[in-house]
Image (cartoon, rainbow over all chains, first blue to last red; front, top):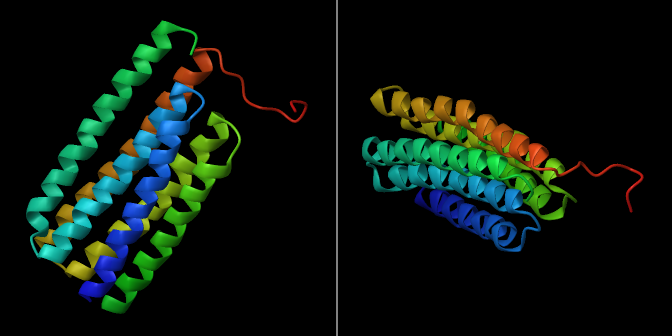
Amino acid sequence: MIDFFLFLLITLSFLILVYLYRVIQGPTVFDRVLGLAGISTKAIILGVVMGTVYDRVEMFVDISTGYALLNLVGAFAIAKFLEQRGTP
Amino acid sequence: MVVLAIGLILVGVFFLVVAAIGTLRLPDVFSRSHAVSLTDSLGAICVLAGLALYQGFGINMLKILVVLVLLILLNPVIAHATIRAAYRAGLKPQTEEDP
């Protein structure tokens, strides 16, 4: 069973690399914001999977919750700032 | 229970891989937002539901379900705010007449 969760961790890490390419390469700044949102989703799932591997889910789930809320505040701040600034 | 959990996690990983491919290959920011918000949310829902089933009934399952509900609420909201900012900043969606 631990092998299956290790496979899941490695797959999610490769997906984070794909989104990181979009963050670095993206033509507009909104592409980078969307890439960061995708990376944060993968990080939330990674936290819960690592809690399952270490058998301490109740602790890692709290970290994931905090990361999700922090991601919301950060994305809203960036979106509001870019919306007021006008041209991309 | 464990077999059902593994099946849900594999379905979720499939959707996450499809979302990553869409993020790489779609042409502009308005179409890429579909890959990030819709497909990514579905994959995350499937994976987290599988992990909650693997824990069995109890307080751990409840906490993972709290993260799941939070993800369902927040992921489309973030994508919508970003795309609204992009539209108001002057970007136009790519249409069929464009090269």
